[in-house]
Every structure is written in C-alpha cells, then in structure tokens.
Amino acid sequence: MAKVSSEQLGTEAIGKLLIRQAVPAGIGILVMSLNVLVDSIFVGNWIGSVAIAAINVVLPVSFFIGALGMAIGVGGSSIISRALGANKSEKALKTFGNQITMTLLVTVSMVVLGLIYVDTLIPAFGGKGAIFEPAKIYYRIVLYGVPFLALCMMGNTVIRAEGKPKFAMIAMIIPSVGNLLMDYLFIYVFDWGMTGAAWATTIGYVLCFGYIFYFFLSTNSELKIGLHHFGLNRSILKEIGALGFVTLARQAVISIIYLLMNNILYGLGGEAMVAVYAIVGRVLMFALFPVFGITQGFLPIAGFNYGAKKYQRVRKSIHKAILYAALLATIVFIGLMIFPAEIASLFLSNRPDMTAAEMATNNFVLEHTPGAMRWVFAATPIIALQLIGAAYFQAIGKAVPALLLTLSRQGFFFIPLVLILPHFFGELGVWISFPISDVLATLVTGYFLRREIRGTLF
Image (cartoon, rainbow, N blue to C red):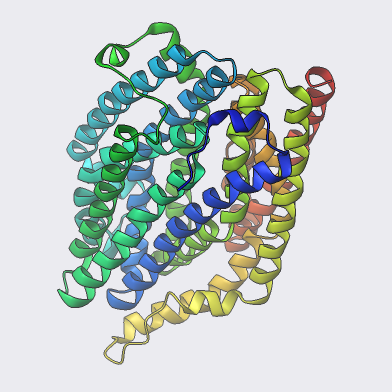
C-alpha cells in the first residue's frame, strides 16, 4: 500500500481527493453496515424475530458508550487535521495522546455503571416482556467489548485525519468480517443463541482494536507519541470536548430516539412492532452508507484546507461533497421505494418448526415493514445537504453551529414530532415523523451553510 502524506489534502484536485477519501470510507461503512444487516438476518433466521428486537434494545446503550470514543476521536481529529494543515505537529501529537487517555477513562467508567444498572436500563429502552431475557444476555457480554469499540472509533477518525483512508477502511472491515464468521460458528454451528451473537460482536471489536494498535506502532502513521503526550492538557481537552460534544450529543439523541421508539411502538403493537423498527433501523444504517462515506471523506479535506487558509478549496469541497452525496442518496431512495417487501423478507425465518406465535409475529412484521420503510426513507434525496452542512462546521472547529445543526434533524424536529403525531395518526404518525424532520432540518442547514460560505469563505 502506497504511503500517503497528509499534505496531499491541501494540493490534490478536490474531486479526485474527495473520491480517494470517500470511497474507502464508504466501503468501510458498507462492510460495517452489512455486518449489522447480515448479523440481524442470521439472528432473525437462526434465533427468531424477538432476538432482533432484543438486540435493538441493547444497541443504543452499547453504541452510546462506544460513541464516547467516536466523540473524542472526531473532536480531536478536527484539531489534528487543522494542526497538520498549519504545520503544528506537536499540537497534533499532544491531542492524540489526550484522546487515548480520555477514551480509556470515560468508557471504562461508563461500562462499570452500565453493568451495575443493567436491570434498569434494559426495560427503560423497551426490553419488556419476551424481549427482556435475551436482551440481558446480549447486553452483559457486548458491554465487555465496548471499551475496545470506543478505542477503535477514536483511532479510526485519527487515521482518516492523517489522510490514510485505506487503513481506516481496513480497520472498519476487520470487525465486520470477524463478527460474521463468529456468528456462523457460535450461532449456527455451536447453537449458542444470544450468547453466541454477543461473543461474536465482542470478538469483532477486539480484532479491530488489534489492527488499529498495530497501525499506530508501524511506520504508516505520522503520529509517533511518547509518554509525555498522554498527560491531560486543559486547553486541548476543552477543544476536544467542545467539538466532540457534537458527535456525543448526536449519539445521545439517537439513544433517546431508540428509547422512545421502542416504547411507543411496543405500546402500539408489542414485540412485533419493535421488530419492525429494528429491521427498518438496520436498513437505515446500511442504505445510507454512500452518503456517510462522502461525509467522512469530506471532513479531513475541509479541516486541513481551512487550517491552511485555502478557502477556495474548502468552498469547492462543500459543493462537490453535496453533489456526490445527493446523487448517491437518490439512487438509494429509488431502490428502497421499489423493493421494500423483498428487503423485509430477508430478516424473517421460514423454519418448518416455527410455532404459531412465531409465524404470527413474522406475518405482522412482513405486513407492516414495507410501508414503514417507504415513509422513513421518503426524504432521502435531500438529506445530503443537511449531513454535509453540519459536518462542515464540525470540521472547521465551530462547535456551536455544528452542535445545533447536528441536533436539528433528530433532536429538535424528530423527537417532538414522534411524541405528538402518534396521538393523532397512530403507527403512521411514527413513520411520517422521519421525512418531515428531514425536510425541516435540511432547510435550516441550507440557510446557515449559505450564510457561512458567503461570509467566511469569500
């Protein structure tokens, strides 16, 4: 693999650079999304649809703790990109050392708390009735691997900030492939059920950590830190916290949404309705991987060139990123509108030994999922502007607008809508909350991004 310097972020043609950054990021996200998708298909076919619902209950808790690492990673990586662009290598090294220390301290503490309050957290996130026991089994085991997940999320953003997207891609592929192989072995061959699914996920996290650890020790990384870089620095911590809080707040809102959705849908249709959302959520993670890939590829380009005061290149990167992401989002939209029933059927078992209750659950899920999927993805073609716009402010270190725009779609608009509309429209009210919030957030982001471009980048 050819060695790449971060300096290319400030010299290479924007279109070519964006593709070079975004394609590995997109492939990595695709493989991770496929991992979640296929993992759910395996669990649904080999364990049952209630098991999919159980995993859906655990995800917001484990992902929130893992997202602490991503928040520290994204916040620190914004500093690293700008520092490298401004030739401040010592600041970049100190920032990376502080990221590692923060990630370990915060995530280990959160895991301890998560294990202590397991019986409170699972029911709060919708793990009720038949869902509780399998969710508890999965939760305990996966939580042991979450610190490794957090370190992987943190390290991956730093690798991308160095301008090494191919290595970041490999780091994302390793846990996905490992998880799927372990799924087959532990669930299908050994018949360990939810225990097997949980250990497969945890082993995937550990494998990813091993690769990232190797990367930073090798000659591929420009960031060679010493012990003195691990000592916490107040000004760096403050900047990491301000920028990282954007990512953390977004994940916190996602966890709140899972909590609300699981409980609202459980009240509307029990375990089967929670399974419908679990399937739609998995498709949501998978289907938008090209857009998220463009967004991830855009971040280091915008941050580096902003730090180097190359504002024309920043402007061009914004326009190119929105164009590429919008085209890809439209292709995804067309596919989901045409094949929702076929996609939903992939998650459901057709075992000959199913009980009458399992068959009834499967029929309910298959009947309700296609309509839900069409509504949830109805505004997909326009969300590129919202995602790129919010990412831009985070990349250049403007924490407040980044936070507000990031939270606008899921926090300021979606949560109030999903609390209000089901009272008037029932199940439909839940699903139409998605496209309405997408449209409103895109309009707000477009306004602020246009004002920023005119005021700062000219």
